Length: 360
View 1 (cartoon, rainbow, N blue to C red):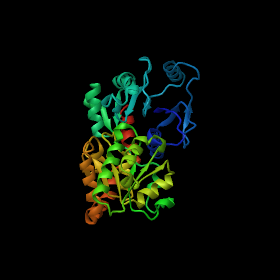
View 2: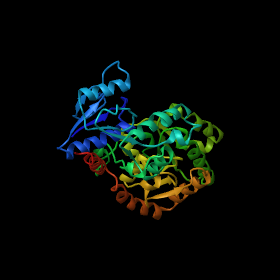
View 3: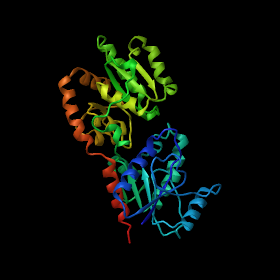
């Protein structure tokens, strides 16, 4: 079969959905010698050798894709994020991957994206032959919000990419300012649903109760957008001295942060998957996680769970991890086994099975 992957937008760094796409496709190309793969659209961000069918420049998006597929017939078109609409005359299977429905669930926070998810993605999901989600929780959301039949929605979990970064024996690049610090790590964006404000408030509560503990909270990500956390730090200057914002870090520095942290904390209100949890587990770290949405699917029994709506619950989870060395080691021992349940090799194998179901 000829399988077309609808390209994403270029990113400065390969992160997010592009990383998921690349992780799955790289494994598919290793195991699938019977099908031919093509990218529909811009491939200047792609770090692999794959055939390229260009979209028509300056054409309307729907017109361009339909015209391209008339000139280059494909058996399957799969988008890992972008919604698309194809003419009914085109005899190809349509597959859409949905990672989460956050703008539908938190409309007040993401009003600018609400119509996109409620109209464009909804229409594509309804027209698709198969919808892939990255967790069982997201599958339930997709069925609920879009009214899709259950057998149309398949779950394919994410993995780790680049795989080599999280393989045994890899050493990260140290951040000198943190080399002698005892720290709790959080790797997250700063959207409202990420609950970084709740995390900062909970950590301040912990430090207020444990003034002699030298534990530091390290936040990675876009520092310029952390003003809400800075506001909290100004209210509690003594405790807030122990909150460190690194800004963006390289993959090697991120690996070092995971490896050297006391534990990892992720208290988002909602995640379609929760990739940083898997990254922490893969290097054998104890995890503090929200007890909501998909996160327990990823953390399994290798995490301590808390209520992200309750800063006392978060602070108590920090206290358990920071003070109980036995518990920490138990979770660390479970972490590797839990992480083994997720890989892009498995994702590719399950994705290929979906593709092959359309072979005639």
